Image (cartoon, rainbow, N blue to C red; front, side, top):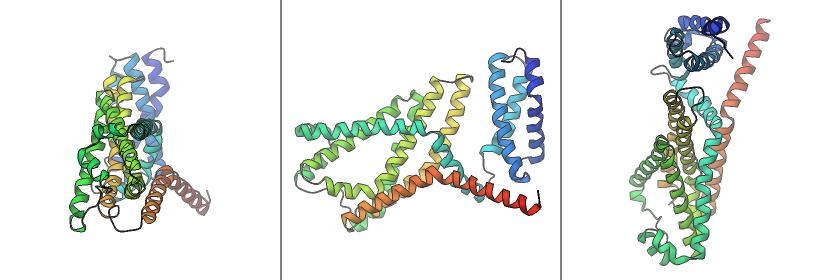
Length: 334
């Protein structure tokens, strides 16, 4: 607990000055700093942001707020943004930062999964228990072909490139809606997740009645693990924005929304390339003539690879970097 603004300045000034010195050295290019200095820059930035939140709460009219805000604003681009044209920085984002952000948002992503999965299970059993209800829930084009013993998923080879583009666009729209719904206190996000979960479960329930659920699973499997993971990430990002509004913590509600929005946008940007890959697979692999078991295995392996990357990529990077640093220290005799 800080009793006065003078106490705040006396106890925290040293790290403020240390951050300012690093910023002066780096200028607009963090590559002027070595690895240990970049790590210290990030650590000091988080401390200053915390101090800024405290100052805004307890001393909102003091000049220290403007000073800390300016200091944080200078540090933010170096901590979170890549220099223009920096392919190395872009690669670092996807190989390290995005998986780390995914793990940090794990509870939000898990909540999005539950909001999708429970309606999907409910939709399946409701349709199986009451088949006429499916005629009211599902589009007529789907129910008609299923009653004929066919699926609607067959795409002629000549149309697959166009279908892949259309599918990727549609999936991106769904993900964007799930993300953007967070600004409405998450209501639209919840609706998108629940509705799409209910729809998927109902479709599987209806095809199960006609013995086509196995073939549908073979169609969905190659792209489904990737596609659904991205939808859960987008939904989690939307819920994170909603949480920033409902529970701002020490920050003002506006500042909490801005910070949550920045984190959520980066999470969504990292996930969109996965969605494009899922659209290509859905357009070319899913409707192909490959045996069903091959499609099922392909999908399972793609899901395993995706989640191994998401759960371990940044950790492996840091372990490798730490090992390299230790080897350099030994070589230099330090």
